[in-house]
Image 1 (cartoon, rainbow, N blue to C red):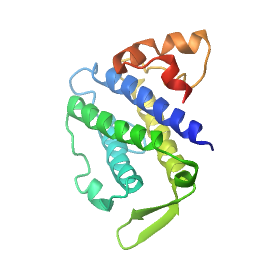
Image 2: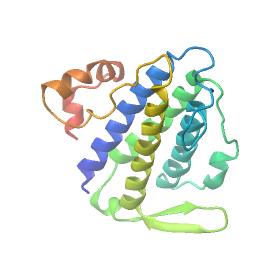
Image 3: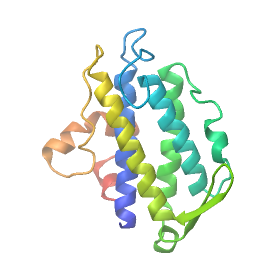
Length: 185
């Protein structure tokens, strides 16, 4: 994958998380933490997992040593508002990292501090894994939203050009102060 591709995926990640968090902020009392069928037992648990894993991998990409401390508290947020703010912060860190990518950095090595070892992996492979992890669990939350008072939002039109995709992302682009030129990457 190219640098441009990773930048666009990081932007799509930011936009999709914004839209998903905005939908979750509309949940009725009790729906966020309600028991549901999925890999994690609730929307709350799934979004907290996505966040802590982002902390883990983004820190590694930045050269940090946070490691498993990222998930010492399995669910650091009990409410969607603070969780959404924390997700925004880590999404912005990921965007900053992707904007700084060079060809050399992309194929370089990243040290991931695991429990009992340091895993050394290619940066592009780690980025791909992180972004796929996000998509995987956002999909689970999307499915869980179908059992709530909130209609699951569209999450997949953030990369393509064309009138339908462009129009669909206007609210999120406006909220972030982005223009379509910003997505050309």
